[in-house]
Length: 427
Image 1 (cartoon, rainbow, N blue to C red):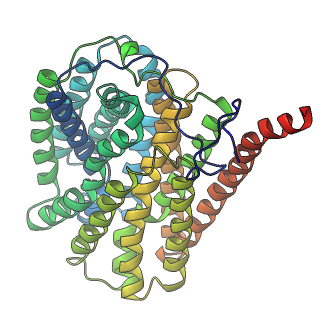
Image 2: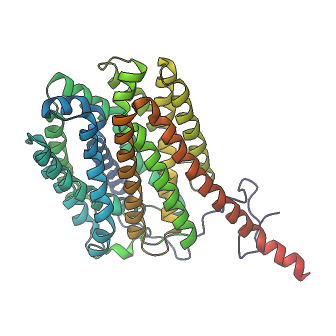
Image 3: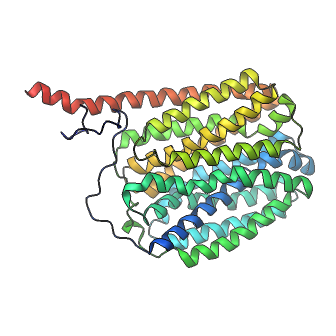
């Protein structure tokens, strides 16, 4: 029977060599706030994820409208995604370090204020310079938000359900694909592309007030989510590499999914929001499903997501000109990507070698490095070779990510076997 590394205790039958059970807490957990307030904070944090992700992916649905209004090419508008990601790459870790002593109540409120101010700047812009300035401010807010939102949420609940709470936080970001992206795409088509940003800025202002009222004030290092449950530098680095490669491969194609569906598949532009809506529903479904498995199968959930993404980009490359194939790919991609994001965040929170806030900030930096590079690669492919080759590049990126995960999985299995081998030899 297999054992937990460093222990003679047997692993439960449902736990594989590659999935080691969550370590039990060494000190009793004491709730910070009443359960109802904790749940209210969790819902508000999830709503924040909805707003930030809806704003981040807004160019995906509005790209043609923005390009036509500003007199720019779609590739140039796609660079807004690149610029946004680069700001998060540069700012995430420094912000996490400089703000590590600030109570999360004030930090998260400030992140939503930056989000709202940046939204107003974007909505009032008439050129690329103004757009970039507004997106810069919003990216700074997003870097602050994602660096601390997971640790803030898990601090309010027992450590044994850390993975489940992370998945609940991510319900909002998954819902951005169900409600956010299709809604702002349709609203932009019915009015003008600026209107969605006005509405998002207004909702962000209201949510900032909710954060200030609901989130408890405590020292950041006091919460149960302040440190990783199974700190391990090598595994942490491996997760970062897999995250960056996967994010980059997704950005190559999905940044330009609207041009692909319109120009390659032949779907009408007015139908695209409906396709994205259904894809977002599958993304939300994935987030709801994965929560029950994260604490028991932290590695396997990542592997399943990558296998699904391999199928997604391979199918889109081979059959993207066929409507039912392209639509099916959007649906499965939404489901698979939500699995991957939740599983990746869970593993970062498990294996962060120091502060989980800095670990998550580093993850955000690597994620957005991949997104920035991927959107740049996609822009070049779109301009020089056409949208039909985008999925092939995405497929190559996921294959690299899968290779890294396979190497880590092999190492992890060897680590689980090692203690038993040593005991047999000693006998």
